[in-house]
Length: 344
Image (cartoon, rainbow, N blue to C red; front, side, top):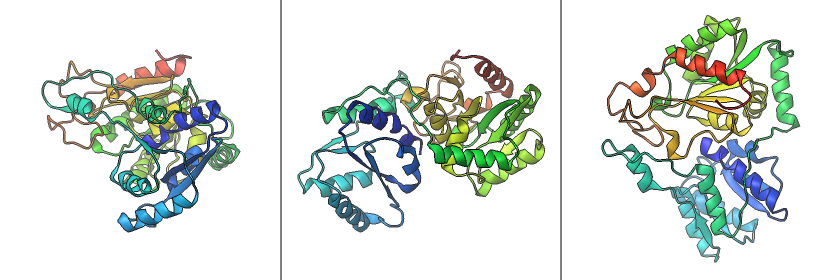
């Protein structure tokens, strides 16, 4: 989800620099709202797990996309098995493609256990832009913000705030998104509770973001029950579009290496992200200018990073990269971020 959100600055920059460009963007249906406000971009929301499953389903998707053409160039920014199959079908039509270079060799050097080579790699937004450059199209993403919620999204956020009696902002609003796609990228939940306890001393309301159902919603509801006067559960109570617009109103967002981190930074919100098994040098760091990263320095934990996406077991077995980060450290960085107009 975060990778898809990182495509927004690229398409927005291309649309601004090339007014006559027309892009047909194929992505998962749930991600379509990210791109609604970009001129010249037609979003095809495809449910690849249901309507276009398997090779037969992808062939049907190819045939449907073909009717929307003709196209001058194909752009593959994902490099997955699905996109390779779609490229195979399109090549019979004579369509040329540019494909992403993911830098797997350099990334593998970052996450191997010994003799790591940990140097900054190109950000994913830069890699996306390079794909378009090879197709002869270039633009400068600029400094953002890159996601601009439309009137409908802002109305959804406004309706939610009315529902929770927060129409007037009388104190600090802090967002916390404690979850990530893999446990190795998640700060322990008890540390998040301790952070909320510290935040309650700064006259603030904490908005809790996460999945709208299952164990994430249960954990967030438990946090709210523990701090009923200081927290509001966003998860499950407003749509994704409303969540994005709500982030605009926050004084800061605290998140893991996750989708919420990317969205918050892309809309220009002050963002504090907590990193463990992964590392921003791999190219997935927050892209916005108002971002602070909290992590254990690899000089203290030479095993960091142990994974590009956070889906590999901890080398040490104790997830020290997350457990060594204290709530007091995060709170201190958060206070500095909220008080500043620029990144410290």
